[in-house]
Length: 349
Image 1 (tube, rainbow, N blue to C red):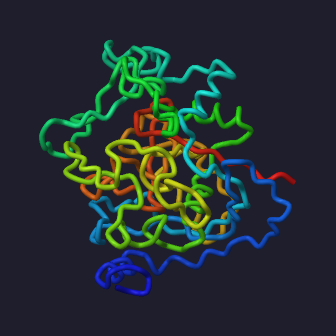
Image 2: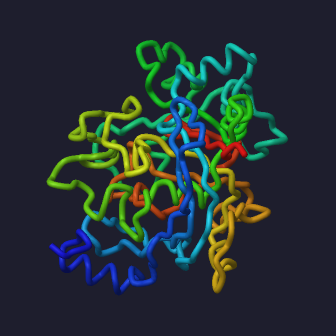
């Protein structure tokens, strides 16, 4: 074991793949005595940090994705802000809907104009649901474990006949980006920028692989809701949960934030571009807001927003984006049963 918490071979690989590019995090010095912290939120001090991730391939539990879009590592400054301690829950979202009558994207049938190539049977209100196959499958086609389910939405996460009864403290899912933004506005908050999200997830540490350190399971104990077993057909639930977990079931990071890795993906304010970080070199960027447009070479016709944190489906067999600094993405008007969000709020003057 090395002083950085990595096994010796991992420490060498980490350095070779960019770990030495991380500089210390410099938190903003501020008096907190006059800061009003709303219930359910925590203060994130802000400051300057190194943003991005090393190529995790070859590191223990690092998986097979080189994460090219998470580099180059670059310096960023963010102002202090407040952040929800956990993901927005079903109960919290239900209160928003009761107060406003809001209807989510998943509850509205998509149009042919919006999705010109979609089969007619998919132009109905619904959403995408994880459906594990009965036996092992090759992992080169995600359509083997995702299916479009008519009637699936935040109230009925598995489709018609399902319910969130008894799951009031679970993260709300089947939330498109505009749904998350609408809730945040109603709550007097906003969605975090990608830089804010990563600063918060790092908890003052620099360059660690996970929000909690450099080992996926410290002392052999799961500290996040991820996928154990053979993906995608056999989730063993060794972390205590098969599927989504209630919020705040695992230890928080040093800022008091729960589930910054795993459980459900979280929307950020920024548009997604894999080449965005390359525009931020040779300077310390203050409060970056992301690119002005979206482009994903894998699906150039879809506008995507950044997602962070990974989900209960992440595993080193397929997706290791619970690693802090790595980036997710999603079509901004689509959702599934592993996408949620949390909010932030500016400090009051």
